[in-house]
Image (cartoon, rainbow, N blue to C red; front, side, top):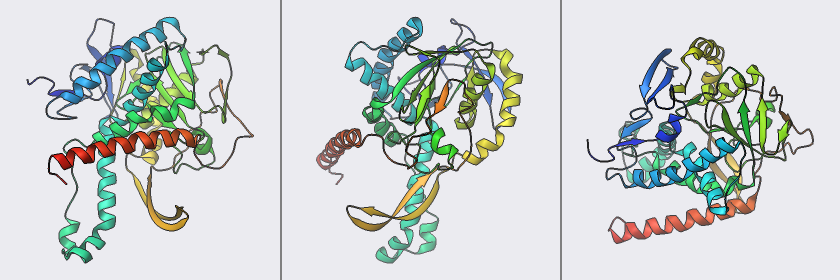
Length: 367
């Protein structure tokens, strides 16, 4: 096999935490579509040939970041506290969490869906302006050999956006373990979800956002907007969970948001998980892995324009049943951004990168 041909979208160091034992290379897997349990090798799961690129350079670069972050996660688990040694380690960890959200196979498929939704929207205009038969255009689809690159880049740069969010470490003291999945970082907005306002509330910059990321069968990290949530039972940065139902509710996020598979370390959990998967089947259908497309009128630069936006389907899943999480009654009930200043920093970084990309394309004669 060519060097770096097999490229992972979930790091192997991370999956080892969910292996059958510390030395084992096998992990328990449950495929939700086939409703089948099996075991798989960490080296081969959550990977695809040339997922990022053909020369393997991006995989090498990501592995360097993963190596540094694995040490940070190891320290968090060992010390049972969230503490960073300086701004660099803090920023790198935030970037890793965001990047992990955007680098998955699911996000690659969503990117392709969005590209084709936009293409479909402009097909009538293309047909009229370019004189191309509409039937010919209808049969055309957009496809990129590495569709995840767009979301990976923008997610990687999103660390600055979530730097205003609070973090807590959740310690699982029950007999039911945390599970993970092929989309382990969850973006969810329980505050606006409860108000039945799912559209445009799940982005990194949105008010009321929660990020949930299981680190091991015993520990998970939760990012939260402290303008919307009050966390009880908090000692320093640690919350002890002793209620099995709270663990099941958190595991439910992985079941609902996963693409195809969930991963776990204890094969004795299979029956319990199968029951929970059946209970949450409708939630997965309601959420869906497809993008909803709509045309709206909105003010852009002081002018009313027709724009298109995308969002996932609405579903209700209340996290206020967690004993340690309380929603603030006086929080602003209007969808919006938490911190516009951090958005501007993000936009500045993306603008600089886009300029570099355009310059390189020009040098290569592509523009």
